Image 1 (tube, rainbow, N blue to C red):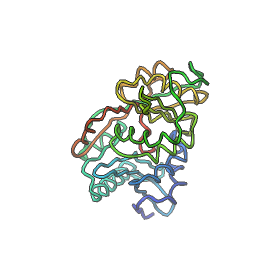
Image 2: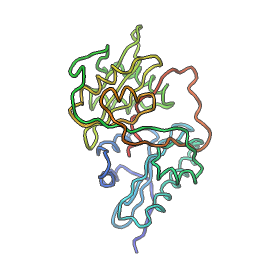
Image 3: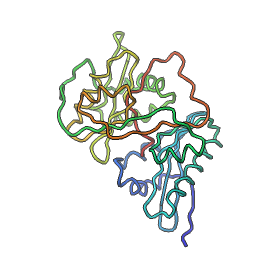
Image 4: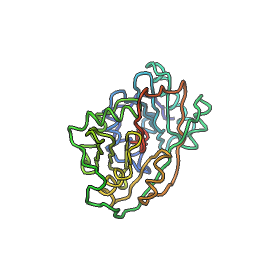
Length: 285
């Protein structure tokens, strides 16, 4: 009988993670980009045959984030293996001083997480768009412009106001890889008031993150970001407030995740009016 081991995720595991994601719309670059983030980690389940499962984690001070469980069809007792990965990840985050853990869960994952002390606090919708041009394709309509390297400090600060933790290195990587779809809109005073990014998927592109100050019309920002990758299929993870803007651009809702949390609620960003419209990912799954 093969001996199962549960160990920390390492960069050498990246090729095997790509195999576990074969049925998902995740580009191989996603996990490489994720592991470069400060506080990123995870665990893999393996035996003599190789990696059979994995889960990602992200720690930002006392806040923790849990990614989806990836399991090979070859693993025996899939539900039990998935629970073992989740429990180990939670233990590691707790040991690192995390007191609140958040996760975007499928319906199947939610049943397990509820038994582990998580509660549902909201939802995220999944949207897809078939290839096809949009109004403003090839033009900079609505007052948006391409994100320059000099915008990254302002973009990073705006993003941190919205999500509650810093990820400017992640945003810089997305901008460098797809600069044409990296868009910003300015306030009347010339400050960055919103931004949109895109990244490659296994099939087409993922759109997001998209963050803007309250009161900013994000429709032009969204349209200009979409226009530059509209020739391929698009996927977006969105909050409810983005529904009408996505629908107007030809996106259709295809699924949903439950936003779940264990531990105390994350503190609101005092004085922040930044709003997250599209999520950057689900910790890569």
